[in-house]
Length: 314
Length: 325
Image 1: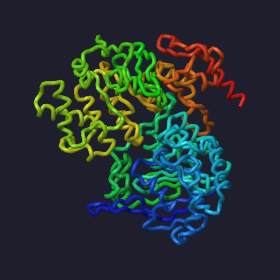
Image 2: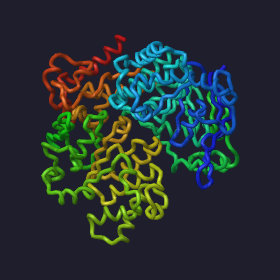
Image 3: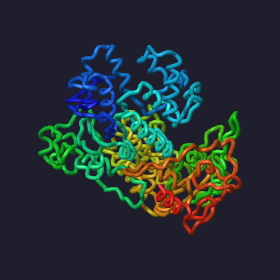
Image 4: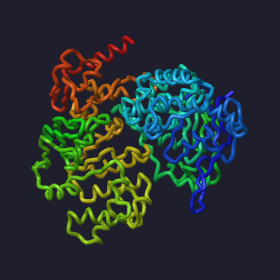
């Protein structure tokens, strides 16, 4: 049984002037216990909305989302609160996601105050210290404030807060994007270690393709609110089937001067999600597009084993 | 640029942000300047063009542009050079563009500060440069405002303003950070294409080693306000001579390869460390490194590095360490 399951999920947002933004369009996705599913795509592709829907920080317009077999829509407020302790999130901007008026002990302890009210003060402190030790900070940090910490330390506090309630599922929403190279590597390694120790499942949302490649076991590629390709990470990275994936991966520049990126470029920019193209969403930008691509939506189909792609030409 | 020193006087002490930096950029060259936050990259380029913010001040050294020392030029003469002969592309296009001035007027302000031309000619120049930057319908864009543009389009407009007067040197400070990779790739291709003649040069500040590897001819690696290594990109990235360069390259995540972690962080630039600024994080440090500051020395005709270890040693040691593991 999958730990997290999204089935035919859609989400729109009403905008002023009466237009509708189609953020997520009929997405199905499963995440198993202990695995990392990487989610890549350009800004506005709907990656973060998927993360928020999976955590039920937002409710879908259509579709079913289950966590540990329970339909999130059918949970009472109380049971949803209990579930929320088991699924948490790490945000991109560590400083903006930490309350500047709370010290590290209060920040990391807050989820316990909310979700595990029966804990006594000393037990709670023990759990907080334990979480801080797992992110290599330790109890000397308890009384410090976010502004006194480096970017890397702030992100470690964000991670400690995400694991203090002993979750089974963590959404990582661009956790390394604002970090320096050396700090990014430290945080990636920490996330890998924590995953092994606690059997965590990650939904790793990022536009940093190198980081996603390092951490993910499976990879999903999003474009305009749809998953256009999904499969084992190694397969998608070495043999991308969708023209969009090919363009995205070729745009990620290798630091190895001997690895020359393929020059596979798309025309123009991502269209507005308030006015979706007909047929395949990529057809106006795709070098392979033909009339056939404009006729009807293109669903995912199995290409090779677990590797699925939504393209008529692949 | 010779022995450039820029300091910020703060209540906690003097921050030595740029600490004796020397390098050259030849015409036709695309040079990448890399390093972590706090390495002094931005302070260095801002010093070149006289845009160091208070309480910062250039306290020493020399910045020669063709045959003039930019640091001793009268303000008026420097303003003439800046914007026309040397132009600057900042990281955030929306901070660089005026929010309530139409874009054609912003082009006009820049062009007419340097050239005696009519408004119509300004418009034509602007339209031409935006066309070359692959902006669809440039006339319509020029009649609008910055907030109507996507991040990628806004950055193209800023690049257009930087290039419209055909400068000799373009300094770009993280011009594609914050943009999507596909847009980043388009914009870098455009910049490189527009600069592709032997007369112009570009200094590209970035922390993205992929951008440097794929676009630059030469790389300068900074650490704690000093240059620790410089040379042709291919040679430096294939076989770095400085342990910091090696560590930065190893920190790029790669599939099926364990991450090499660089511990610690850049030292305080107020209490500048004794010896090599990198020694407390360096896997190869020995006694001398904590005592004596290594100077930037020649490795061969095109490469320099600042380390007490002889070149080649770190490559061998890394292999030995990998085998031992």
